[in-house]
Amino acid sequence: MVAVTIWNEYRHERENEDAMEVYPDGIHSKLADVLSEYGHDVRTATLDEPEHGLTKDVLDQTDVLLWWGHLAHDEVDDAVVKRVKRRVLEGMGYVPLHSSHESKLFQALMGTDGTLRWREAGEKERLWVVEPSHPIVDGLGEYFEIPETEMYGERFDVPAPDVLVTISWFEGGEVFRSGCCYRRGNGKIFYFRPGHETFPVYYQDEVQQVLHNAVEWAAPADAPEARTETENIGTPLESLE
Image (cartoon, rainbow, N blue to C red):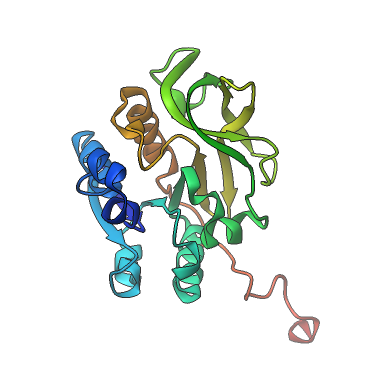
């Protein structure tokens, strides 16, 4: 059992009628139901809670953090971003979803803007599994399809993934690196493209399977404490005298 925190800015589902219809209790609630059914210990947090629901105590008790943001990236407090980034470097897993590619946290960990091409056209997406031995795609075939979703296309402004697990193709001909694994410090990161506030992507079995697999993959293992950017690397010469 993995201790999972699902963070959602929770704006679309309160302001957009289409989003309300698809996710009446919020995307975070749907994801919590899914991962709880897989046996994980799940809690949720949202933007408008004190400290965005991501207090030190909450993060200390979190093995893997899922993140869904879109409208309100700029409203996330920099101090909270710094706190979460430190936890990732220490070993907490991090699974940014869909439009979280432009969140402050994702940008801070990638060192890039995370920009991409997009088109909201309700097109079919085919996700090709290009690393079939990877645990994140355990239980899947060589590809699966999402009937209607928003298009994301290259160029995706991220560092080359440590492992590219899935590549997406869309009806318009675009392709996209849709399942990207990274390591930062002791933390494991999996960016997963599928998801949208007005399409029922998170109700799909294959997507749910990937999220469960990603949580298990990203959960921390025993490892030495990670250095942070504020720590000295090496030993000052004067201390050797």
